[in-house]
Amino acid sequence: MQPSPVDLDSINISDPEFWKASREVRESTFATLRREAPIKFFPEIPLQNFPVGPGYWALTKHDDIWHVSRNPDLFCSGRGTNIPDLTVELNEFFGSMISMDDPKHVRLRTIVSKGFTPKEIGRVEEYVRNKARTIVDRVIEEYSGKEFDFVDAIAAPFPLQIICEMMGIPSTDDRQILEWTNVILGAGDPDFGGTLENLMRVALEIYAYAQALGEDRLKNPQDDLTSIMMHATVDGERMSPQEFGSFFILLVVAGNETTRNAISHGMMQLTKNPDQRRAWFDNFEAGTKNAVEEIVRYASPVIHFRRTATRDTESVDRRSRREKKS
Ligand code: HEM
Image (cartoon, rainbow, N blue to C red):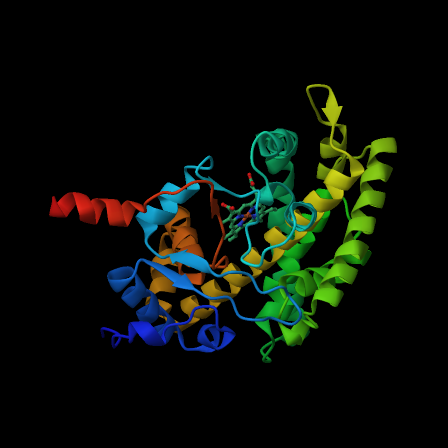
């Protein structure tokens, strides 16, 4: 069934109420935007003491987003990848490499990629398989046939424990890391105490935790990602404990909530659509790549990323419409 069209003037994707609407409403809203206003300006609205900026242009078409992502000289990340305007220092503090342009970005990326070699991923893969079995076995044992919260019992602890293991964080600190992640990503969300003050307090706590971990691994290297990154060099230079602190915030935040949401949406859709579940499970190995891509697409755990245009430019969509007319 085709969703009913939405009135263009009534659309405000800055309004948190919009994001609480049903999936059908959100999808038909974005369909209207793509069809009638693929580049549309929206004002920012005040969120729990956050600064209110000048507003932003929302690009909703795949070709435009692709073009922007592939042209970092024209659309930079260094002025922030979230909508509120923060200083460069704050953007780098919270966003690390995600809010940087070259040459800073390439330097950090070179260091970080030393931790994501096939050897390191191979080491983690075995851990991931065992962890999946342990978590599911524990849930079966604990709830045996009773109702339980899938997010709390499986979708949240699974990626969290993997990232903590990769980084060399003791399992006794997993819960603390999860709470910190929720406050950082819940900025503006009262359920997670998401005020600017809380965000700053938690960010400083997680930063201090990471710095201490990084300094420890510099002195006592172990078989973990933190040790690899703290000892890696680019042009003879190591990552500083401060840089590691910010990267740590990015990694635990980016790695936890995205995967938690994708796993949760995936579970819900496979439950609602048993024919799809059967089709995947009947041909598990061959179907996995597509199934994962489709779950991530459907869940869309990341709903926006900001870029800032460094000079006047034109969208791909507008250019192609102009070329078609002439
Ligand atoms: C379904 C899961 C995930 C989704 C949807 C996702 C989404 C994204 C997106 C859209 C970006 C690009 C940001 C930009 O263009 O400005 C990004 C970057 C990044 N993500 Fe993820 N991510 C996921 C899982 C993870 C995990 C598990 C980790 C770490 C363990 C991670 C770490 C990072 C890092 C470090 C970057 C920055 C890369 C760079 O700047 O070169 N992500 N992610």
